[in-house]
Image 1: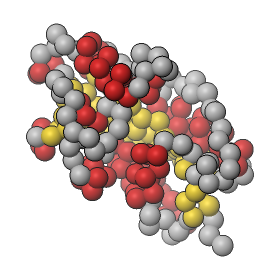
Image 2: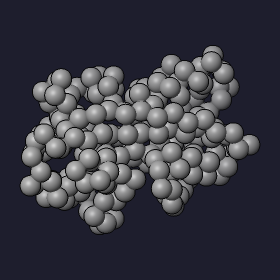
Image 3: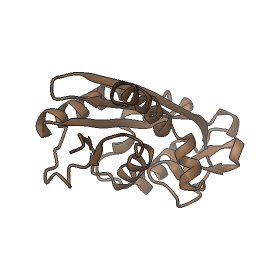
Image 4: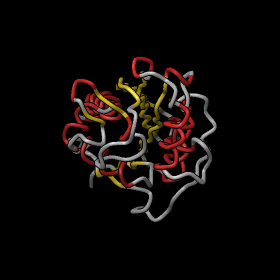
Length: 199
């Protein structure tokens, strides 16, 4: 029986992305829902790494198996790095992804194109029940678009513009996105580390 690796999220977009990116690992990928239990983990960290480690560790201990968690978000230069670790709950828990995008665009309305630099950042942590932890970071640089465009993605994808593709990340194919995203870069690092250990 293959060792299980728990993808510690209930976000279906992330689960699909991780299943694709981690397909070469010699583990059975599973989710909290498939394991019959969902945890509410308080993300109290001040960095993406803090939050990824908090989540992965909590899930590893609770489920008694290796757990992978990420924390990611968008950092906008003109906003002093906001929303940062608050990306998923920017503007309050009551807002939808679309509401958060709208809020960010509203805050950026007076910012000229050349000052709209942003970065998607992701940190992935793998934790074991015995307390071991492995982390990797990925970054994708872009620009906050003037309006939302595209429907292939989630979160801030419709306003994250990549000049080299003349498109937002929500306009890219899943294959393109999986090759360039901050999450794929962090996953690549985790993949290499896990394959060198478990090959």
